[in-house]
Image (cartoon, rainbow, N blue to C red):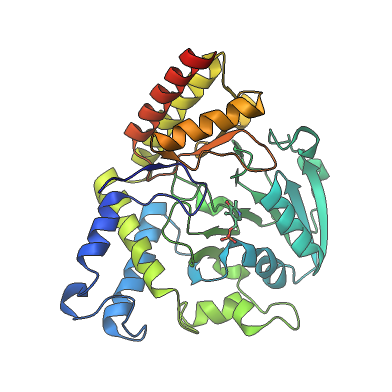
Length: 361
Ligand SMILES: *Cc1c(COP(=O)(O)O)cnc(C)c1O
């Protein structure tokens, strides 16, 4: 068996220890004689899995008691509609910062339903930076203020959170959740598709301040109502059972093997610094993002020559570094180095890039 170093933006690598544990438990989960995929979600055994996942997430992220954790489906993309349907219930207005494709999608989806307003954008420079925000331009009447905290495609991250006063801050944290400690109390709502840093695709996690769980806008379908999912312990219907189980294993890995989110952050900083430091002095490759806006998780880079980029991606793939091709809107390369990418993977990638540079510069 040989495993590649997978730099995919999502779905992405899972810790090997998690995959091994899942494999070992596949046919007979804890003496139940069945796989987690096969058991009733109403069984005691499954209840302890979903409860365990929820309490571990609360512990690892230090989520305060006045926040509810919801395990949903439909991906982060469904939250683009669910957030306005459930939160825009007073004035029907919300502010958006446009920092990339996902932020734009959240904005356009909200626009179909409510009065969504663009507060700032970095579209002028292909979303290569996080715009400076002036709270004086924020709408104090807005029902919420939306950001995409880490922009997966462009490789930018908010280094500071906007001060939105009493207006709840909502963040899409799909590609940075669990990568470092986060002060949950600064947010009204956080949401994430699981397939970057939490587990397999199919699970969407929502962390919502309890006072924001209320009656949704008129006509909101039952399945898109936070209140329904909160009242039913994320089991109004069948939850994504297996994905929640894997997420629990990932959280156990972060807690017990990594040692928590501070440790996770140190490791992620070390990995990102290796690649950024190399890019900053390379004569062949360079990063595409302004220094103050750099992501820890997604690192786009280019040579400036499309043929050279393609040659690099091809050579890297042959050497076992896969999914390095950049997003079609940026071109070049992108290395997504989520939690599960070992330090060794980044060390080896940088060594490979140095070698490629020596041969091609
Ligand atoms: C991947 C991603 C999405 C889309 O997630 P789905 O679960 O596929 O809907 C949205 N936002 C961000 C920041 C992402 O990285």
